[in-house]
Image (cartoon, rainbow, N blue to C red; front, side, top):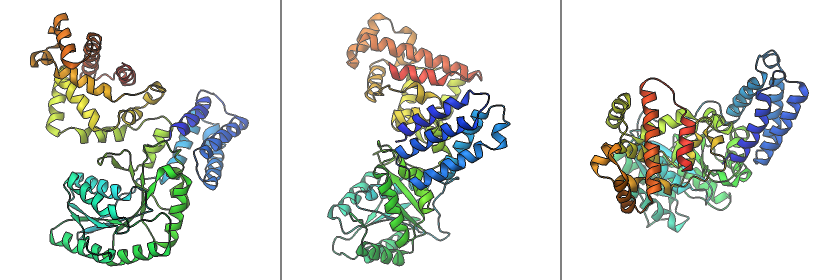
Amino acid sequence: MFESLSDKLQLTLGDLRGRGRLSEEDLSRAAREIRLALLEADVNFQVVKQFVATVKERSLGADVTKSLTPGQQVIKIVHEELTALMGSGGSKLAFAGRPPTVVLLAGLQGSGKTTASAKLALHLRKQGKTPALVAADLQRPAAIDQLEQLGKQIQIPVYLDRQTQDAVAVAKHGLEQARAQGRDVLVVDTAGRLHIDEELMDELAAVRAAVKPLNVLLVLDAMTGQDAVTTAEAFAERIDFDGVVLTKLDGDARGGAALSVKAVTGKPIKLVSTGEKLDQLEEFHPDRMASRILGMGDVLTLIEKAEAAVEEDEQEAMERRLRAGQFTFDDFLQAQRMMRKMGPLQSVMGMIPGLGKQMKGVNVDERHLARVEAIVLSMTADERARPEIINGSRRARIARGSGTSVQQVNQLLQARKQMQKMMKQLGQGKMPNLQSIVAQQVRR
């Protein structure tokens, strides 16, 4: 989403990084470029005006002018202000001392609210909760069916009633069922319309009064830019919500909604949808997003995704082999499957500091991973455990079995050697050049 903004900010700030001294003219020029980059990203004009003024004022202060590396100090200021713009610290959901905790999702039709409800339920279950869903969107005929199917897919119960048009009754009955079944979180999917009207707001208010949610979340489509912020303002005037769920953050929108909504409404972004799959919902961390925008990567989120993608016993087994400098094709396959669980490869690579710039313009083909898996699965167990025995005739057989070429098999054998070298360095406490290794593998 932030690719264009990220490129422009990195270019502007990169010009400052290496300079020994910064004049007021240098800072004014950088401020103009930052202003243009934010406006092109569809950030609210008033937000941009205040942001640039604050950055410039701080950059002209003594901390920068007396710094040995003034360019880096300015980058630090921009990072801090971007973080503050999006909400400083992360904002988590609140949970009731006496369950079930009710989470009510509101939003316009087409914002991805029903899918976000299922994603949120799955996200909560990963955190050890026992969630349930309520299909209280009775305005859109397919909404009940959609939520029911999503519930079956993730094996989370959905409370529904096709015989009534009373959303309040459905929500209350869902809460009673959740309480009776010992569910500790109830996610309520409410009706949305193409625009904000009295009927929509009255129904939302009635459902809210009936189930008394501890969290009211407004679902906004990030692809709609400033329209999303306008929608948030209108909802804020009529119904008090606690935070925002931003959907379609993986799209090609310019990022204005993510950078504006907190400053305009005062409500934090709590969760973001980073892909179409139901497990692609994550908590929003303003500081990590600011780091991504400025090309600094996001190591903490990368670690969290890696830990979630592999079981604890698998982690321990791989760590033992890593310390011994062992890296077989079974390990290679396990590592690749773990990487695929972490999300879209392009997104994962963007979290590695410095790698995004190296991968600029490189088309990441996810099908490459499937070809690699086919090659490895075409090997015998002995070949996977002892790759050094794979000679010319074995390579030809593996290529035929996987529907690939001998050249592609050779490339994979070479890639495994490089990965083994990296693992040995890690096992010896050395830090390999991870960026260049990943870049080489993806370019193959």
